[in-house]
Image (tube, rainbow, N blue to C red; front, side, top):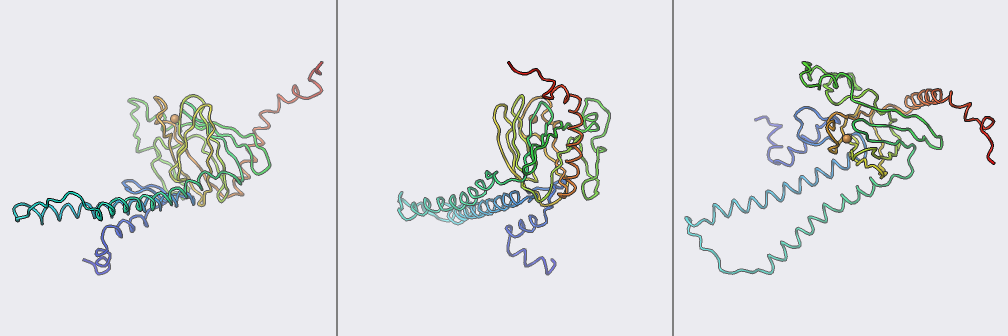
Length: 305
Ligand SMILES: [Cu+2]
């Protein structure tokens, strides 16, 4: 064994898991077992909470299974063990009631803190409305600061994935590839769209999420949460992405036959680049609305009686 490795070996499974966790990239790699820490403060806190819960479970597992194994081998009949005859022990019962309560509080306290933070959608810099449709997503940029926007588009599965997924298409799913933000080619089969949701980095973005037909759920793992998109109900969430990149997700609520074919792609870009893009989209949106404008002008409208 390597000298450097021997020290870690002594510290056992917990440290080994930490090492795996520490090496985890923001994006999930093939065969990755653990969650990813994601690219937002929230997702990192959720990740830490998950690791804390995992360590607690490992500790409980070691203690409980350790006690069972010791009891099975040390106190077996063949070794002459005689069962005790007492049936109650106040000290033991008090301990095994109080210790689980303390464990639950130790888990619930940080979890509640994070949930409160995740629910705080106020003081956001901009708002995006997300609508789930069978089987695509609609995005509306409502405002940036005080400035209203009218940018709306539909985001569908990319044509290559769509063709490949057809029964007997003869196309290879592994051949559906695209470059990620860092220029690395990745398989994007069923994980790519025609129009990604472009968002700025280092900005508190509020989302209002709803559904048009059935319940969908908007989920990008790197952001650290998923939210149901329910017709007639508006849920809200927020994110603040710290790293530019392309983050992929999927609908996370069984919503009909093409549930598996309505991916989500978030393209996070630096603020200046985003503002330029959004203003261009706004200009296009206003231009598209322009022919209707004269008819709606006050002079052409018959006055009310
Ligand atoms: Cu869906």
